[in-house]
Length: 400
Image (tube, rainbow, N blue to C red; front, side, top):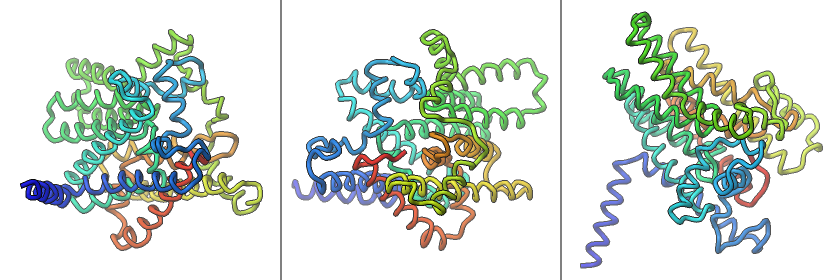
């Protein structure tokens, strides 16, 4: 009887995997990431780089995780902490409240958010562009070169989850015009701005399209009052954080001021990428192996995303763009922000991680590029980069 029951479980699981392709894609990336992390930690001497097989989760809690966990445990102690938005620390603190150790809750939260995000991303792609595009776009996203940050103690998965939920409900609003959906759209956009400053871009893109679609109602007092409410809900996250910073540090934009600790500054778009690429080719001896690989991967991702962005702009000029207005706006603004800052002088640090969150990019590539190019060139290269990047990250090398 037990054997029959076990067989039914595996049969049902197999049927679910075939039916729910998105789940198979997401779980494959997650389980492969966990396996790679475990094998890497098992292969190196115990204690080196602070590793410990008994606490294998350590491979997923590096670098920025330390800031998030410190905020979750002790709050915003210094101005430097304010560069890290409160959404993710709040989630970690909730896990701690239920008795889950901070190190584990931070990663579990990312895994759960990653899985739910995968569902809504696939659903958005399927409803608007078909199953094949949705599947290819999801595969490209979960295996992008910076995908280690989607399954680690970072805020990326949670931020992307609330962002995709916002666009999901806005897509529903555009079809049925129900107020419930526009309010849910703004609610999730507001929550996304609790995780990263670029969460503001989510609401900006949607608001522009919303106003454009209701241009005839612009003089209607009822519509204007509704728009004010929509704006308050859509930006409540960043507004709440700024009020807190004013009370705590007497500086509502402390998160911008704090960037000086990382020497981050505004630059000409792609300047740091092109300058670092030139130096990597001209004087490679200036870089150690870790920095060289980090810069190369960031530069390659930024240049490819830049080319895709240029292609989108060309299609817009020809009025042939396949993406909806709000997705195009979100992508263009987010990309410009991602490649217009530099840390530590001319470093392209974190560029690939920032670009990773621009999910419309994957939909466009999956729809526009040939399946042959995606399956035989783009995806294999992306997977190789993802494995290299995760390996270095898990082993404690500087990688951001």
